[in-house]
Image 1: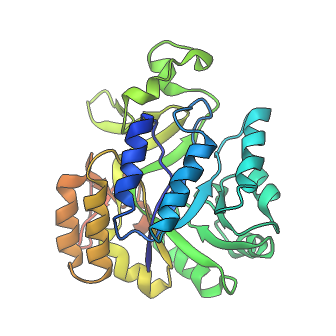
Image 2: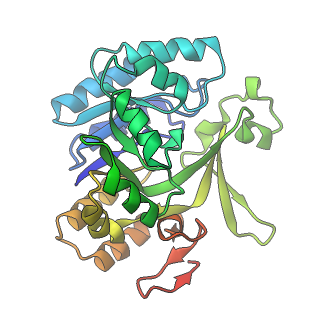
Length: 303
């Protein structure tokens, strides 16, 4: 089972992004997804910068995939989509049906998690359009994946989001700008002040969601490190980790140790606790509310 690093969801300064991926090149991660998937106003890196990073990672032995923006709203964003599809270097992850239309039958591509592929007919359709891999929707439970795995099209790989704050929703509005009473078109790039997103608490002061520009994430960190053996038994090909601003290399090392059985599942879970920016959760995998942390004893409990 391979490890992948999903696309960077936050807005970091150019130098920080370059340092981050320079460090990633030395980690045991197998696949790296690159590109801006959240907001086209984030201009610290242009497509040429992402392609420069891609070339370095390929030289380091990584498989690189360019991800497309999830919510496309303007002609300029469509233009960038076509440029990504014509990059000539990497496969593409399509994150909306417009991107599927652009890449289908023309180059290797991955059906991203935001296509919401919940059943076999949808997967079979993607396979006929040339998808080589699909990413399971975040809210799908383990038992539903087992049904799909039993009948998935031949040659279509399966990838599961297994670590990180979950990207739950996208909006035409920018909530980080709204938090500062700024309009979206004059957001003053507020996201750059929140390298792991802006935490939204309930009235009881409990972490609920994370605002990340036009994206809404879970406050808790989805963590399926103790389910890797189960995923392997189900025939999952790739396990996806999502970037965070601190300790990402250590997180990758723990997952690598868990997949090679150098660490037992409970040991890997314990080692990840101090590396996570918030409490963990794994409810969706077990068919429970997403914020639930299902314990090893089988009893659901919030962390």
